[in-house]
Image (cartoon, rainbow, N blue to C red; front, top):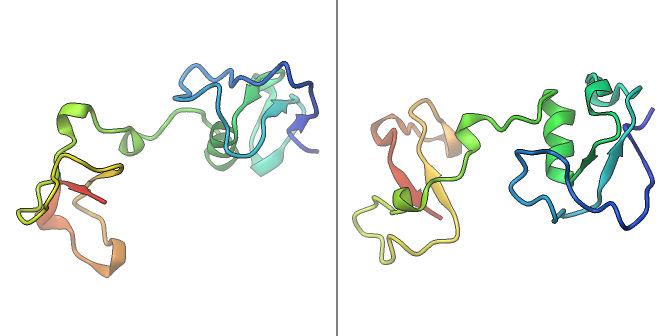
Length: 119
């Protein structure tokens, strides 16, 4: 059965305490019913909760509302591109902390492990 049921416009706030933007969602809100098995997850502990799309998808995929440590935003003091030829090393809308074991884009990123790059 679906993990959510329709509800009124007055309940538009994510109840996940760890949500970065509890008043915002890209698609729609999900009010959780406890007997769902959607995504193969056990939703009973979230019965009655309202989740934004991001928190809903996180639980649907992983069975937890906890953000993985690798997806936490960088602190403002860490947001500086280390690329020597970057024209605006502290002015970006997106930052990437390079993981040593990554092979994104078919590249070996080990020598840049821990470096911060802008997008």
